[in-house]
Image (cartoon, rainbow, N blue to C red; front, top):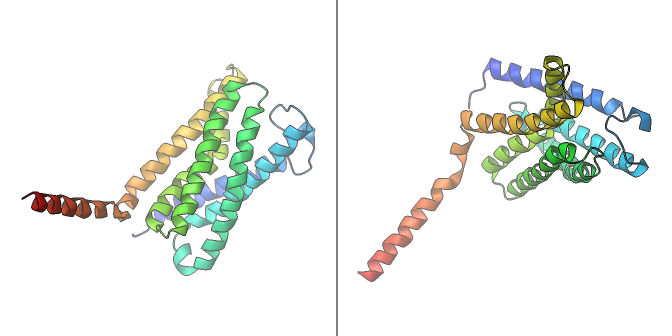
Length: 227
């Protein structure tokens, strides 16, 4: 598939934004100062789990961004594989840590709801991406990785949504803005991922049509045996 300059420019700009916002968000936890934590905490254990989630999630973003660069797989397949292994090694624990942190949310369901859904879907898409790669189902692998990385970057787009909503609704309740931003980042990211998959024609590469001949063949054989 031919890659346009506009597509490459969009990848470059979005990649730079993801990396920059990820580094900014993680910088609050580099000093391990509990007072710098952004969400309310239940105690030291909660903070430790949050730090682990933030840093593994940051690794996932930083290793996932280069994977979308055109021709990386063709020109540097070993780099693609190494980055992929690091990505999975980061996403799987980070999604589980995110699920635990969501249940520890001080403000309850408004905060834990979207984060719980996000963590579960993040884990599932990562498992599917890893499973299809090991089975060498590379068409399906690409689709699952696009979906998975859309969820990986939900923390980034969530911050952008929060800034936008905060500027448009300066008098709105902070918790409402936070919750709405989290749901928007989850839903919109997945919608964009599906649009990307369909618009780039990735589903056409899947061998789904291979099932039809076998079904037809069995039907024909059954009809012949009845006759």
